[in-house]
Image (cartoon, rainbow, N blue to C red; front, side):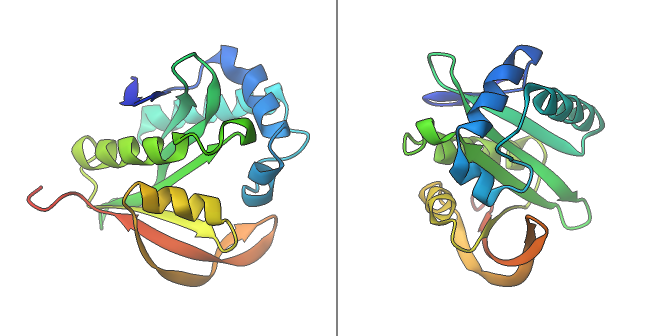
Length: 177
C-alpha cells in the first residue's frame, strides 16, 4: 500500500531500505536526541528488525508504519500510526525525518496523509502527536499540518530512560465525518 503525500510518498519499508535507513539515523544526531530507538550506532540489521516488526504489526492491525520517500526515491524518514485505543478510537501519530532532508515539508506532508488514512481507513476519531518538550521542529511540523496544541503533559514520555514532559497535539476528522 502506497499513500501519496505530495511531493513525497508513504510506503511500507522494503528490505532494500535497510542500509539507507541505518545511514539516515546515524547521520541525524537531532533524531537520536528525540527518539530513544535512534542511536549513533544504528545498523542495517537494526533496521531489518524494525521492518520485520512493522510488517507483523501491519498484518495484525496494531501499527501502520511507513517510509517517507521523496520523488527521486530517497528515503527521508519514517512515519506511522500506533498505540491504538479501540474503545475511544484514537491512536498515536509519529514521524521522523533525516537531518539532510529536514525543512523540506516531509514531516507535515506525512502527518497530513497519515491523519487522512487514520480517519478514512482506520475510522479513528482522533490522532495524537506527543512531542518531547524542546523538540520545537516536531511541534512546528505538527502545527503546520493542522494539529491543535492541547497542552504539556508532565512525564508523558520516556526518553533515553528518563521521564520527560511532552506537548500533546491532536488532529480530528473534519466536521460531518
